Length: 207
Image (cartoon, rainbow, N blue to C red):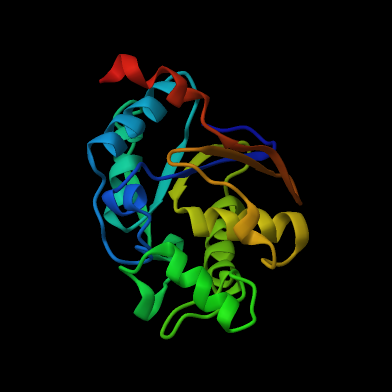
């Protein structure tokens, strides 16, 4: 049972994948967590053990969904997959080194966040699908605390939409693996926490 009050959104990024470690753009390619990512997910679960969490939503891509289900195990909750929370599509550039994407954006004379890879998306495109999904979650969630596990590009788009109303500077916001951001909604949005990875400082004890 929940009470009236602001909705807390704990917005997390998934754990590490091989592509993350190698600096490869994965986008919507369904890359699984590697062992380090699973360890990070367990650290996030332990961090949130004493948090009251009323519902958990996740991108339907494996790396985010596995992170979410790892946390859910500590709360006896099911995870609801939401395709709108998928990572930004990099289209023809998926599987390429990330520096190649940034070089292509520079060559096109565009900011990285505003550059559209062939067959891919801009950060604004991501916000255009992810933000309505987030608003739908909070619409009937008065007083609840909700975990959403998504991706770096999605989190940046959501946070920058709240901060600035657009995604022009989304690429400058750091989002480390399994970081926590805390958003609140009470008729309007506020941001209480960004890129919190304090739980990873104790990761050695989990290995």
